[in-house]
Amino acid sequence: MFNLKKIIVTVTNDLSTDQRVDKVCSTLFNDGYTILLIGRKLKNSVPISRNYKTKRIKLFFNKGFLFYAEYNFRLFFILFFSKKEMLLSNDLDTLAANFAVGFLQNKKLVYDSHELFSEIPELVHRPFVKKFWTLLEKLLLPKLKNTFTVCKSIADYYNERYATNFKVIRNLPTLKKIETSKISFSSKEKKIILYQGALNIGRGLELIIDAMEYLDNCILVIAGNGDISADLQERCLNNSTKDKVQFLGKLLPNQLQKITPLANIGLSLEEDLGLNYRYALPNKIFDYIQAEIPILVSNLPEMKQIVLRYNVGEIIELRTAKGLANQIQNMLLKDYSASILKAKQELIWDYEKVILQNIFKNLK
Image (cartoon, rainbow, N blue to C red; front, side):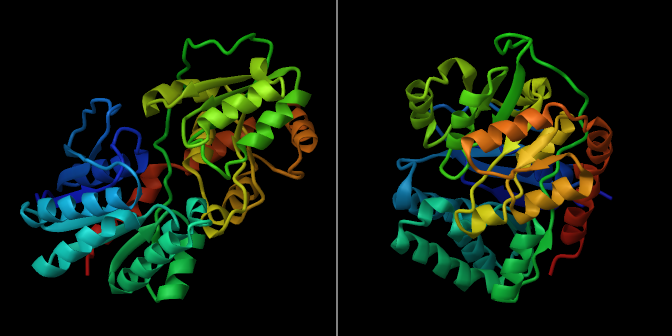
């Protein structure tokens, strides 16, 4: 039944590649809600077309404290003077404005935590900034009634620490038919090792680049960009793996979906750099499964659980270049196809979205 209630959904990214938020918005839109998704506009933002309304804010500051302060300040006034029945805040960096408007106007507020924001590796050596986000988390989270997050480990952490009631909605993809791109990855005889996602510290990218020195029959394809993109490209030059690594840059989801199935192995090698990475359940794991390729993941609880339960790949044994290369070579000799096809049918958004729908049907 269509109720036409308006939900304003907010994020700090530019909307174009956030598949989780798009799935959430599309699900609610199809259930009869009116959706306005608000993000920000960057210099390189590409046009987007959605079934629901979107709005991008162009800011003076695009990083650091001034960015968060300006965004939440401007977001507060947009939310305050916009017609809506509900607010959906994504991550801690949008919560302050949403909480204030929800409190002042007595509007229902829903919160989706995509990660342990106060525990991200970028804050490890910034104690003052880390303290600020931790205090904000401690102040606001116990007051929230409608909350969900991406995995059980993060939900358990928040529920135990703040006596909250976070539910789990994993960022599962929709069931996808295999489509491939015409992009060529060097010689067809070579096996393709794929990493897709952000190029930031703690993703194990330095390790896999070093491992390529011992993998003569393989090519490493890296799809994404981030803070260490230039450092990684320089690393390839310094250890003579230049011809074994290809950087594709940041791709739109529909482009990535055509490239991923070309790979022989998908990587998710996050390091244990604090709780945010320890509890991570990266989207790319499920994208690899939908593309019907086996995965090699870190020995961390959420990723490990997927591999053990569904037998869709391997857990890294040795975090050394030679050890990783040997494990990849062994994986290339195995057949995971039957297990992957079964997991592909089960690990999809169609099942997960029911939890989201129930949250919005029973708002407190």
